[in-house]
Amino acid sequence: MFIQGPSGSGKSTLLGLIGGVIRPARGEGTIHLLGHPMHRLSGWRRDAVRANHVGFIFQMFNLIPYLDALANVMLPCRFSRTRRQRAAAQGGAEAEARRLLEHLGLGEEELLRRLPSELSVGQQQRVAAARAPIGAPEVLIADEPTSALDADRKEVFIELLLRECAALGTTVLFVSHDASLEPLFDRSISLAEINRIASTPVKPAVAA
Amino acid sequence: MAIFSLALNSLRNRRVTAGLTVIAIALSVALLLGVEKVRTETRASFAQTISGTDLVVGARSGSIQLLLYSVFRMGSATNNISWQSYQEIRAHPRIAWTIPIALGDSHRGYPVMGTTLDYFEHFRFARGRSLEFAAGRPFDDVFDAVLGAEIAERLGYRIGDAITLAHGTGPVSFVQHDDKPFQITGILKRTGTPVDRTVHISLEGMEAIHVDWRGGAPPAPGRAIPPEQVRGMDLTPESITAFFVGLDSRIATFQVQRYINNYRQEPLLAILPGVALQELWSLMGVAEQALLLVSGFVVLVGLIGMLAVMLAGLNERRREMAILRSVGARPRQVFALLASETLFLAGAGVALGLGLLYLGLFVAQPLVQAQFGIHLGITPPGVHEFRLLAVFLAAAFLISLIPALRAYGNTLTDGLDPRV
Image (cartoon, rainbow over the protein chains, first blue to last red):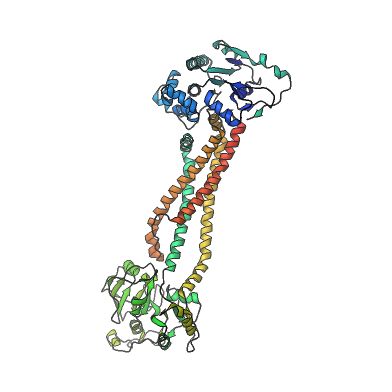
């Protein structure tokens, strides 16, 4: 799913709502993620849903600076038992992390042991792309993950990411202002078209 | 477990600041425990200097002064006790034994004490231990001397060596009793008390080296009496500096004390050494408390330094916290990460501090022993040390909550947005 919209159109707010970081003001709508009523769950429960079922890739700075590439990819398995178990079913967290990294062109042992500061921006984004689908979360939220990449590498990156997620059965919510990426996705939505509330006064979302 | 290894990795990434923080904490902990060690050992060695003696008697002055010169061989007596008074008092029916002592001379800065063989028999220190010989035997001849352990060790004396005594108690004396050398007949085992620093001779020997003196001045040339001739003379002293008293029963203590304090022929003072030791200690207690207070503040400074380092790091780490949340960390896990980092710094500081303490003790022990006669036992930390460390770690725990709460709050407001 490709979600397109210019900056300020509410992309990040939408992702925050889906990810359960923010919650709609009381009575201002409902959000169901995989059957979980995110608008009603406590912060603690929303954290659990997110940890177990959602992977994230952001525009930049996705990695923990003091963990090497491999450890960064394995991080979600440390915090979520569900994802750890799913990774274990694939042969274990470390094997799965190595496999994902290799598919994204980061198979060399020497690269896996590097800290993020020793990787190029493109390599960092690929590490992030390997991390988000580990443990096969149902939803992967990618917030402008390609905006720091060169034009010719964007498509390669997205294709790799989509192929990996298709294999794992993960739905990708890809947000970008760049309409040229749209043909790469099965479905697409333009926020400008669906955001009807924008014309009416909006109550601010409540921070989680 | 996940959080703990993250904390370790995070600290390793900041190893310079983390290392410096650990060192600061280690130094403060070592200082606190070191001061505490010196304090307790000093107090113990203080309390152990004399035991089994019911009364100490000297010319009338202050009780602390009397204690200082008679037991610690520091300072000097204002006046002496006549031999006659001493003989009268020791005849008191409740008095079991007495040890007369005569002070005023020295050997290379160490005090010389004239006494009798009763000293070796009745003197007790450290809960009833009596003096033992490492080598040789008590003095017998007029010119025999028995050395304390420290003098023998420091000056390298052996049985049979001859030593010259000096008039007066300073480390440098212009008047030597070099016409009448003494021979070392015995060396005592170490006691950890001022006995280790004392040269013991007989009262007769003390009298002998002054027998030809007139009016406090050495004999004029040609008027000196050679040692051989002195031996034949009557060497009963005219006076002594003080004496220790042992009673047949403790119940008689106050009765005998009153008897001595009201003694008509001479103004005398009898003190209970335990009470006087307490008085002396309470005087020194102020300095001791001040020292403890200062080291307590040093520990506080160490902890505040640690807090500053953790808080300073927080702002640059907001992005890191957001990333952790996006990969599934809950706010309370972020809280735990920060708290365990702080606690780990404190824990490593304590471990290193203990290492420094024992290293320091190892180095300082012989020096302190030689310089101050205080034996710093290198023993594993006792209940008291563990209590101090527990208080320290509890304080560190409370402090660790501050950055943890800040990070917790940041995480909630920042959400997953790492573009801070």
